[in-house]
Amino acid sequence: MTQLDLDSYLDRIGYAGSLDPTPRVLDEVIAHHTNAIPFENLDPFLGTPNRIDLESLQRKLVSGGRGGYCFEHNLLLRAVLLRLGFDVTGLSARVRWGMPDDAVTPRSHMLLRVRAEGEERIADVGFGGMVLTTSLALRSGDEQPTPLEPFRLVADGDEFTLQTFVAGEWRSLYRFDLQPQLPIDYEASNWYTSTAPESKFVTALIAARATPDRRHALAGRRLTTRVVGQPPEQRILGNADELRDALTELFRIDTSALDLDAAFAKADPPA
Image (cartoon, rainbow, N blue to C red; front, side):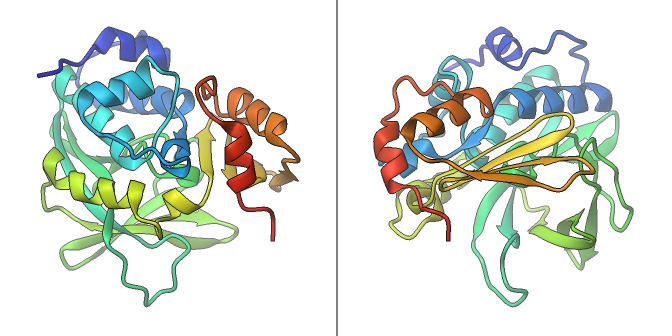
C-alpha cells in the first residue's frame, strides 16, 4: 500500500508550522493547500482520465506540479489530515452552483467532515472557483467569514446547503448530508466525471486558484480575476502561448507535459 509522503506534501504547499490536530492547524493547511495547488481539469479535457489512488494523487499534485478536481484534492487532503491525527470522514454532495432551483443533480462532489478538538468542521479544497480557503463550523444559519467571501450552512432536515454571499446575494454551492463515504465510493463518480462525453470536465477547460486576497478562474478562453472588494477583471486568451503563460504564472501549473495547442484549440471561445 502506498504511504503518504507528508514531508513532500508540506514542502509542496509551503507549510512549516505546527502539525498538531487543532482547528488552527486545519485552517493553516487548507489556506496553504488552496494557494499552492490549483483546481484544474486538463487531463480529462485532453483525454486522460483522472486516477484517484494515493500514489497517483501524489505523483500528479505533489511531485508533478499539477492540480486536480474535487476527488483528487480532497482525497489527498484526507490522507494528510488522517496522518496528522484528525478524525476525518468523507462526504458527498449534489452541486447547486449555476443550476436552476429545481434541477436534480448527482452526488458528484466530495468534501470532508473533520473533528478537531471536539469541534465538527467542514473542509473542502476542491470546489473550483469558489473553493473554501478555510474550514467552516458544522452549524446552521450563522454567517461565517473567510479570507475571501462569507459562507454559511443552511440545514434542511438531515441535509445542509453550503452558500456564499456574492454579488449582493446568497448563492448555493452544493447540498450534502452526513452519510460517511469511503474512498472506494468515489471511484464510480470519478470515472464518470473524467470520462463521460457529456461531463463538463471532459468538454470544458477549467482552472481556478485562490490566493489570500483574490480568485483566478479560467473558463474556456476567458480568464477572470476577482480581488476582494473590487469588480472582476476579465480578458480573453488569444493563443496557446497566452494560455501557457496564464496556467504557469497565475495557476502555478507545470505545463511541460501538456499539449496546450490542442487544449487551446478545443477550449470554448467566449460567447
